[in-house]
Length: 416
Ligand SMILES: [Ca+2]
Image (cartoon, rainbow, N blue to C red):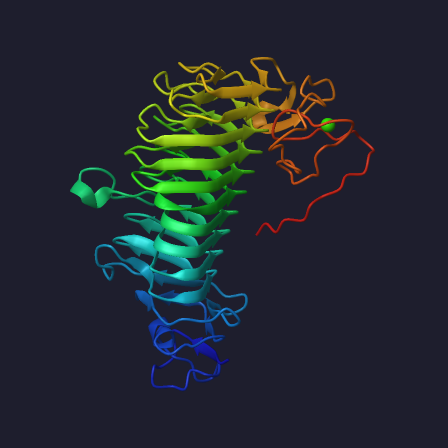
């Protein structure tokens, strides 16, 4: 295990192993690192693409991060070929890339391909022509606590080149997308998980969508399963902005997924679409439980609160949800013929504390309090990570009401 240093005042012929003898380029470190090594990058702006393809190990991740308390920007303007990223991580594993600013990429921001066990954490990614975070054909990939904005600038009109979205997992198994803030994107879905993969979670993200879905899971001709979306906040009023949508656009299958403890507020289209109308494959066993959907669906085409559009979707369970004050063609709840629905509060004022400021806690007189089901798929914690149930029974909606003066037990989930 070796600690290396990189500085804008360094030289690549230095030893790189002390703060007094740093290298000049991050790439110099990437070319030599081995399992357990740490690369500290001193503050400043580095005008380089960083290509990482050396592997750590299960007991020794390779870590790249700014030197303590310093801010590092990787500005890759004009240095990124098509289908690469400003940070380009390929054919390797056990990498942690933490706390960098990545800006001005002609293609993607951070690109991960054919990798395993890669953690992208605490990075700020913006001014990017295509995807901010992109991973494909990989496993055990984590995006944690990143700030992604001003991505997909290229937008429409570039042929097939414009495909993909702002934060992607494409054919990735065992992934985690958590604690990210995705906002002010230019085009397309904010978080998009597609074309295979599974065993993933999307949780505790804040998404302000600008176009199309905030969180989109689409098997696109492949098989996908066990993808859970929970404790996210999604808002955004543009055309086609569904809060959370699960789809099978081009055959394939999407099965065994749960959507719970999410808050969907003022989305342009429906808050939750558990199976989209243009699906043509198998969608089954999608559970929509304990979400709060409010003031969504101004888009008359895809409007509404919770929509189950696809008639062939089976095993849909809609339980313990609040869906209120939503508009558009779906109303507050549009089930299909295979939907099991119980213990929802649909179209009845739930008496939120202050929905105009996005405070969806319940007032003491809310009809949602202690009115929920305790049966299958009901989560053991709420949007605030408080233990469920509080009081005598489970509540309806994303937030469990806490009686004043009663101690509460919190589950400690790390949120960067
Ligand atoms: Ca309760």
